[in-house]
Amino acid sequence: MKVVVIGANGQLGTDLCRVLADQKISVVPLTRRDIDVSESVQVDRVLGELQADVVISTAAFHKVEECERQSTQSFAVNATGPRNLALACRQNNAVLVHFSTDYVFDGGERCPYKESDLPRPLNVYGVSKLAGEHIVRLTWDRHFVIRTCGLYGVAGSAGKGGNFVETMLRKASEGAPIRVVDDQVLTPTFTGDLAETVSKLIRTEAYGLYHVSAEGECSWYEFARKIFELGKLTVDLRPVTTTEFPSPVQRPAYSVLSKQKLTQLGIAVNTWQDGLASYLGARRDARKTVNTTVL
Ligand SMILES: NC(=O)c1ccc[n+]([C@@H]2O[C@H](COP(=O)([O-])OP(=O)(O)OC[C@H]3O[C@@H](n4cnc5c(N)ncnc54)[C@H](OP(=O)(O)O)[C@@H]3O)[C@@H](O)[C@H]2O)c1
Image 1 (cartoon, rainbow, N blue to C red):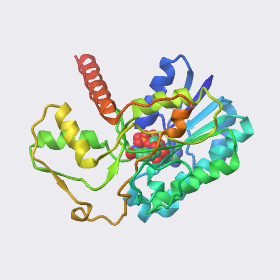
Image 2: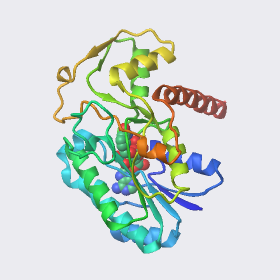
Image 3: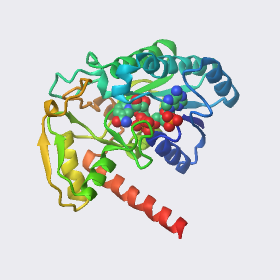
Image 4: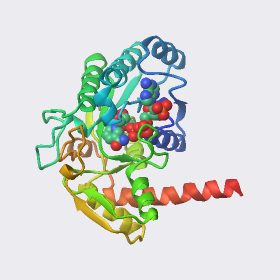
């Protein structure tokens, strides 16, 4: 199997390349320098030349506040981009794996969202990602559209300048009090775990829309508390409400995704607590490697 990974230097893209290569799959990693998904001519040319069996795209414009201000750019990357990819995959008969988000939901529920639940995004990012989902599903049948939630990976999100775990650990090292919202509930998901699940999904022909995150749920505050507990750090951490952190962008108060459809395929996922422990281990290993290389 030959797999192209677009966004290969992002946090999910990095783990996808590693996991697939470990499974002896032939991986072609592409960064934005190699392919800009919003440029249809380039997408056609690059994917036409590569003739992959599977194209996995993690490309997104996902700085939520910037999406609100730059809706044209948001739709170019998050909606026109997936259309370009779906058309090229259809032309080359390649499976397309495209990632979407829990932010397609309004957060009004209090039990995990199923794939069949009605999306109602609260912000431009969510609307543009929902458009991207629809356009992939409309254009090319051999797709996996994967909605996921609260990603963090060792590579860190270039788009967001790191990830939540690293932000918490940095703040803890600075010793200042830390305030984290306790009224937004999600499932934090380690990109290493998500990459493992994707590697199983692409071995099936069960195309369609899937919810894939870790198992369980917590607020951002509870997530932070677990980070400090596993990191054995004593921190002045307090819960606050979303209204205490005014933002021009509305976010869902509850965005937990049901994995029932995935489970029916026989694919199980880790809990978010296990994912966090794996992340902290992978992070330690990565730092050891860097130190050894420097020495
Ligand atoms: N992060 C989250 O919490 C979260 C939650 C739910 C869903 N998702 C979805 O999961 C996917 C992966 O997210 P992530 O956290 O791994 O993001 P990330 O670390 O920021 O990686 C995104 C990658 O896409 C590339 N990219 C951006 N615009 C592009 C374009 N026009 N053409 C080609 N490549 C482009 C980026 O390249 P540059 O580095 O050059 O910009 C980067 O390598 C996205 O689809 C996102 O919407 C993320």
